[in-house]
Amino acid sequence: MSELTIGDIVQAPNKSGIYVGELVEDRHDKYLVKVLAVLKHPMQGDLHHPKQVENVVFHERKALAQFEKVNVLKSVVKLFEDELPEYGESLQSAVEIYRKQLESKDTPYNQEALKALKVVEESYYLGKYY
Image 1 (spheres, helix red, strand yellow):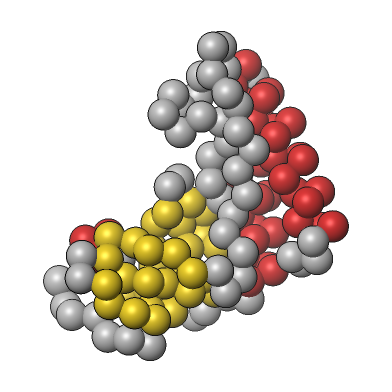
Image 2 (tube, helix red, strand yellow; image 1 turned 180 degrees about the horizontal axis):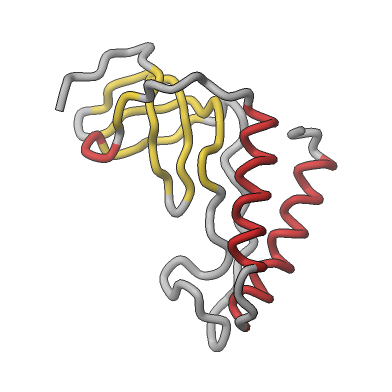
């Protein structure tokens, strides 16, 4: 793996989402990354019991906000070489892709995840994310 430097634009997963961000600090085994775009929206529900709806707390999970900073293990951060998308457009696209995946199969998890995603998406509009 090539060494990354402060200021590089990187792709970094966080929980179940994937983001594009600017590398702002080296923190030994982690990088501090400032979020600039969303590539994959986080999964809804309980991350410890994925795709389950019974006997779990079903969480609504928002994507990280524009310019939010997050610590990410160095081993999973890689250089982003595509054109940097605009945050609002990337968030909207990530939500639409996730929604289509959930709508493609009628399962109890997908039904609950669609409900949670609708609430999350409404909060994006109210918060003027896009």
